[in-house]
Length: 532
Image (cartoon, rainbow, N blue to C red; front, top):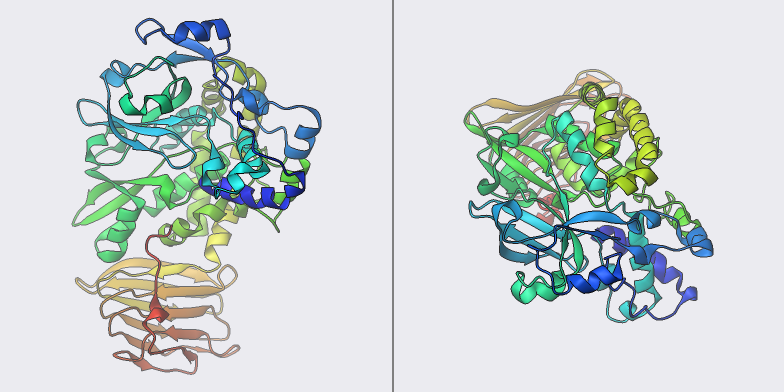
């Protein structure tokens, strides 16, 4: 969510010709539809009330010129009356207690824990993005714009996803919609932040306390930060790239463009003497996003502007837009798979996402929301399912252009062989036991440059093969004392091997292809392991 609103800040600042002050009372006084009922709820307890009819965001409803310029988005959905359960801290999930307050500057959230140590996230359905603004801008029209554009989010999309994710074999949470009474004081000192608001409660997979049968024989759960630290720090930790690719194609299918590394947890498995990590997606705020249906958002979602704001529809209009926010994790966790792998995964997803699965999933919308969106959502999802092979190919080709082949802080040998004018093979051998841990054949028609990262310790690199045409190979040695041999020769186009490393301790055998970029500056082999 934060990345979305930060980009809308740029949009709003440019449009300050429409300037004015931020509306003091932007949000509706209460989400409860019946005001007489609301007065009763002020003194009620969860034991007295089982459900309430609310509008998740009736303040987003607009008409006429506002919608023409700023987009209709999901305004009517936010203002649709929906019956929701009343949250009862003492009874929900068998009884919960507060572990810690969470959320950033937009979302109100809590981590809750049951008596067995299983954790849940309670997250507000509506957002207030004005908190990300500097103090000055927070008092201007910019705050109004940011808040208004939250209406591009489908507040109920996350409830549709579990049946489809389950059919596809992708780990998932099962969110539930709840309302906290205005009289509820079980949140103690945080009560005023939670009372009289609509929330989503879902499983929070964050450590070994939250292992479930859905995750099979997993032994732990790690954050992306911890997973990447292990993957690049040790030579016996591996990402299940095929399962991550399956999850990423599912992201395309549901039009979820905001899948950066912070949107994943990782189930950890014992794999012989190694550890293997399987992705668990979370935070589905931007699934089925709708943005470009107003003049101003349409302009700012063009390829030359804020391209990532891709709108959900029956076709994949811009696959790269849906990939942009996840480029960091994709480059580090999707380096092994071929075009054939992606086509096989797309076919498997098509087979699992049957008409019946999609129709049953969309029925998870609240009834009145289904009346507004259901049939069109079903048509969109069926069309996107049918077009998955083409989207998967486009996804693969973007990743294949400039792939990274990354070692670890242990010792490896990188072997590159130019097989012919079209194909270049890359292998990575773990020197501790001489075991091959990576192999892929790259094609010149797909790949412009392959970058090898040795990271730490003393690594070996060898490039060989005589061809007429070839792919550029970049070697970034890393912090150890490396041995680099370039025995290749590309007759039709010289200088296809580029070496970046520190001069001290590095042994290089130059060939006719080698470009020497060695230096005394240790920053030459810097590598980002954690992202933002």
